[in-house]
Amino acid sequence: MALTAEEVREALRTVEDPELRQSIVDLDMVKDIEIEGDTVRVVIALTVPNCPLQSVISERAKEAILAAGAKKVYVRLTAMTEAERQALSAKLQSAKGLVTLAPDRPPGSEKTVYLTVSSGKGGVGKSTVTANLAYALARSGLKVGLIDADIYGYSIPEILGIRRQPTVLEKLIVPLYSFGMSVISMGFFVPHNTPVIWRGPMLGKMLDTFFKEVHWDEDLDVLLFDLPPGTGDIPMDISRRVSWAMDILVTTPHPTATHVAARAGAMTLRLNRSILGVVENMSYVECPDGTRVYPFGEGGGRDLAAHFRTELLAQIPLAGDSPGIEDPVTGEIASGLYPADHPVGKVYASLAEKVMEKLGLEPRPEAVR
Image (cartoon, rainbow, N blue to C red; front, side, top):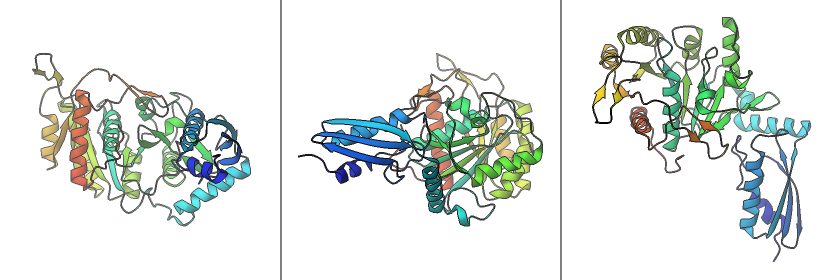
C-alpha cells in the first residue's frame, strides 16, 4: 500500500536541520511531496543556497522515507526565497523571545550555567583546555554552548577544524554545531587567519552580537566563554553581563605562568565573581616506562589553587598532537580535540566530571560519542 503525503511528512518530522537542530517539517523546509505507487519525490528548501550540510539533510530525508515504507525516494534540494527566510527568522525569534529580551540578558535560560575560562598570559593552552572541556561535557549528554570571546586571538575554529560559515537569517545568526556543541567565534566572520584590527569599543559590539543576535538554545545546560588572556576589556565586559559566571584559571607549572595567572584570578575576585578551580596544563610527560618528566617544573597549579583557596581540578599532560577526531555529521577533522579513549581525553573526562559535580550538573544518557 502506497504511503500518504501525511505519512511522508510525519517520517520527515524526524529529520533535523543539522545547524538549527529542529525538524525540517517544523522549519517549513518541506515544500512539496509527490507519490506514485511506491515512489516518493520530495522538495526540500534549504535555509541558504549551497548549504555545506545539504548532503546530510538529503540522505537523512531519504533514509526516513525509505524506513516508512517507500521503495524509491528522490529528494530535490532548493533554497528558501528571501520572504521565506524572513518568515523563518521571525518564527525563530518569536520562539526564542528575542523581541522581549532585556539588552544584557545572556543566552540560555535561568537554568543555564555560565563558565569562563581564563589565563594571565597566552601560550598556556587555555583555548585547547576550553574546547576539550566543552567536548567532554557534551559527551556527557549536556547541551553545551561555546563562545570564543578571544576576538583578536580566536583559535576555537582551528581547534575544532571548522571551515564553514554560520547561516544568517535576516539578523539572526545560527551558531555552528560541531562535535555536539553550539559554537560561535570571530573566526567565522573573517577570511581564514585574518587579523582583527579593532579598537576597544568594537569588541563590545561583537559581544553584543554573540549575545543578542545568535540563535542559542534556550535549554543550554552550560555556556563556556574562552576569554582572551590578560585583564582587558573583554573579561570585564563579560563579567558585567554574567556577573554570576564562575571562572576556571588555566596555567602551566612554570612560576612565570602562575605568577601572571594570579592577576587574572585577582581580577575575577575584584569583579565579584568566584573561581571554580585551577587547571594545570602541560603538567608532565608520561614516559613509556610509566615515569613522568616535568619539563616546566612542578607545583605551579597547586600553588595557584592554594593562593585562591580553590581546587586543582586537573593536571593535563603534554602528549604531542591529538590523533584528530572526525565529526560524524560534517566530516570535519578536529586536530585539537582528544578522543574519549585517549589518555589525555580521559583526563578531560575526569575534569568534566569534577566540573559537573561542583556546578550541580548531571550527565544524561543521550551522550555525544
